[in-house]
Length: 87
Image 1 (cartoon, rainbow, N blue to C red):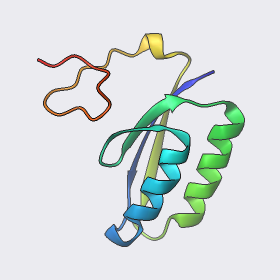
Image 2: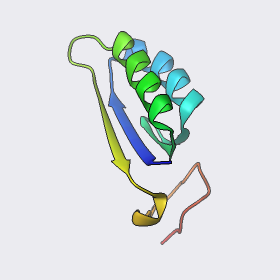
Image 3: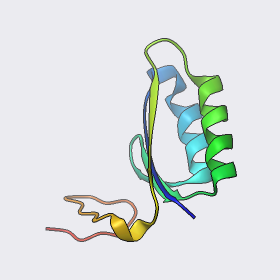
Image 4: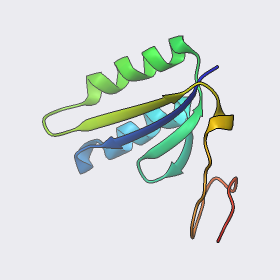
């Protein structure tokens, strides 16, 4: 199952809807940043649902990795996921 990192930048009026949508599929990491394992079908559904919410000047970026093992994750300060190292 591929590991996915997703980031969105949307108008403040749609932030709550995007947050709710992305939390159904991924782990909330920080403000508009999410990560987790998704099947190709789950990723497609998330992308379709997010696309419906997007309006002018909104954007979403998905990073797909073959496996979480290929990611080195280092967080500084507050990390709401409690899964990383603090420096």
